[in-house]
Length: 91
Image (cartoon, rainbow, N blue to C red; front, side):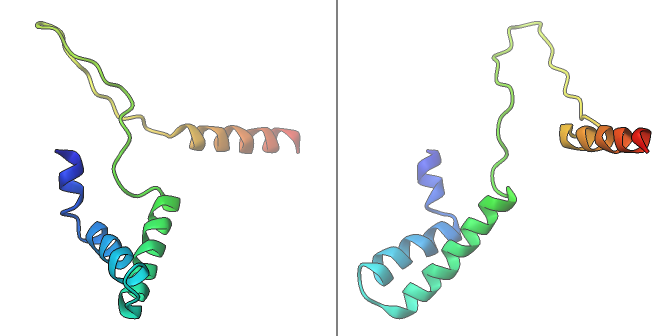
């Protein structure tokens, strides 16, 4: 079902139409639109936009509970703070 829903996304349609009509069909207008759509797609991939990645998957048994907690700082922020503290201590 997920693969079918992917085709309903506008940017996926634009990229698909650009490949079929622009690259394979020779229509320059679709080739330019496709180039722009692919550039936006690549930029989105570089910036990390899109679907979030599942970190933990488990089926709960009856009677079990799941607690979801938001971490206050990311691991990268923790590393940067530790690096800054080391630099301040070495001065």
